[in-house]
Length: 620
Image (tube, rainbow, N blue to C red; front, side):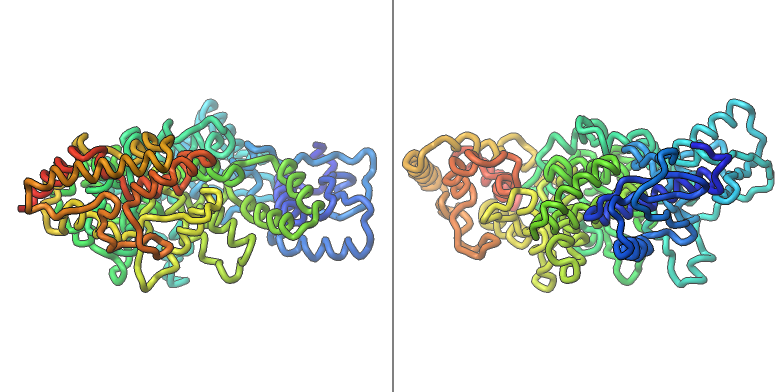
């Protein structure tokens, strides 16, 4: 590009191109043919451009134009000597080249990517001069200056001239933006995943080290997360999480059930740690889950409890995080890794969300949908467009919280009822975290907040392929299951409970469904009759065990999401397995939820009996 003949600096041109890309993704109904530079002007080519269409395009462009950025001149043709301005490829989109950062966002990005030996530093860059000024405490040598240029280029500042100055009196970074908070009454960047440099130095070494590890992972792998279809969660999520049958419980805001109920059903319980930055809303972790500090440490040590951090680490109890990491450094999935696993999980299940394409690929895909013209195609195009807009920026800035804007919840909201369902993305983000962790999701279940459960039922159906009936494990029913079948109560010793339920004598329902999936209904009926007979023989000699029937072992006291009395979900699963598995993938949500409800149902009568005996010995 001939920079000398153009009034615009190369950095301005890059920013205009970035702005233009956002515009064409939102207006794929127009035949956009790219940006061109000619005689000190930037042109946007639209063949067969009428005066009326030109006015419309100018009006639409103003809605997305960044303040201070010039608008390209819309035209119907360009001179043959005009130079085409290339649009961003996937690497540049992921690395946010030309993205209009705010000052705090730019400072955060630079502190994440520049090595700590350069911290603290001051910076300033101006589009008008094309100069990037970096103020350090020391004079960098030639190799360090070269390193800085490469790092800045990777962040999209490659068109700037680097000027380094020295100021040995640069103060340390303040740990809080008190001036901004005092002026506005709140911190507008409270959800920003802060660079490690901005964390309080009082944090323990184990916390700072794990935070740095998570930050480095993102710097090294974010291009893979968004573009490499072979990149999987197994490369960065602990095996102890992915290889076990687990559930995900979001305790960020609302109080959840007694932890004994989850431990009895799952080998691993993954908990989103509760926020601790608002005294009026914060819930004590130990009180919520009815355990003490020693019990928590033991459960972490036994690999029964794992945790996630979903937002800015300053929102959490650092004392609690430190204690957990001291016991097991791999027990907490930090936000960058959680966001990455969620993006991969979303992409694998949806086929369209969470994947970065070039701007031209996105535009041509949307253009085809717009030209098809049907109501369904137009809705899909608009929803996909909104999901693609700023996806990389939001996830980079907010981590897991960014999923609220780019996940299936917001996608469906944009498609059908954006005004009436504007909160759907926020209500379902936790469900998508569970996808990334390979865990069953236990939604927040409260009669006063039915929208949480309904939202998760809906979004689960979307990921599962819209099954007609999509039963889920309601949190309120866990207690019924455990009390009626295993005689578990909320006061029994949690470590003894763990000892009983961590043994191999309690297999998983997925094994059972696989084993019975090829049986006919007549064979299933015969099998059930044999099981009932055997149970009767075993129970005849022990009167203290209440007699129960496998085809109704919940006693008819619980119900599925569709509010019908039901027999054992295991048996129901056995009956529908031949039909279900013949036309669905075994990891679809219907199958997962069958597994979730029966996760600790015994393989055969003897093992059922043994399990109840062990629990009874603990309770009695």
